[in-house]
Length: 330
Image (cartoon, rainbow, N blue to C red; front, top):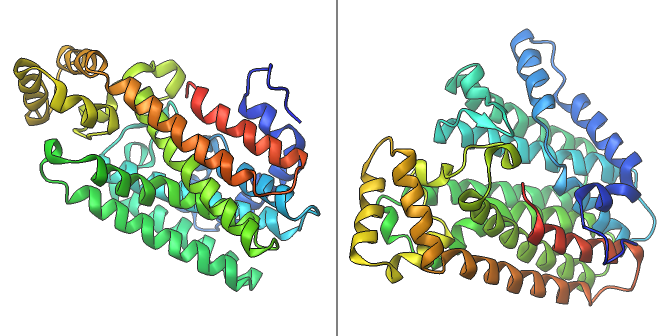
């Protein structure tokens, strides 16, 4: 169990499952292995870009909090979840024309947009092949639904033609689809052998934690530095993405500040100074504070879902993960 007095780091959350996470990484390498030289070259770069392994971590902890005894298949299912996550990142970077991911060149920047799209498809197909090999219909149902919802979320974002009319309701729908659904699915897959009540509790835990995770990520885009986050500060504004801090602050801004925001959104390549002005206005009008409060409320809902589980060290590690979600810097 993690001490509440100690800082909650991802390494601390993963300490009890490190051997299984090593197995997940090995499974990922096995699943994406290919004889085709170009795919092998891209895969080599992808394995270097692998991130925090948060979703596999939550899947394995969810299993520990509900099943008690580890199932060897869960390592492969955790690898499938991470493959789906990697596929969405590759596709997102191609759609957004992003050049950096976790401080490294993206697939589309290093190779091409076409290769990035095809590689995203390759990762999805490898995940499906593994699910079929596992012959686990319930996991297949959950993760196929998840990937469909994520695709619809991406389309929803593309159809937001006027970013300044993007409402908080629109934002919630987008975040649930693009981020929370996979985290929720990972937690539910980890609880497949549990009772329906516990399985539903883990699904709700993952959804609330996932939305909070994205909100904190959006706050970090305003407050973080590139050395911490692995991407340029203010990237969402630079790419004309409207997130919760701006949504809340915009109607509370002065006319002059609203003009600054509109000008930034109209500029194909906004300057650092223009981005800094909008960041300052969002902070001044309470956007960052409001977003942090919403993330805290969502984590409280996630914690309430955990109270429906039997006490266990894994349950308390999941509880500690909510502190990590709120306090992380990258």
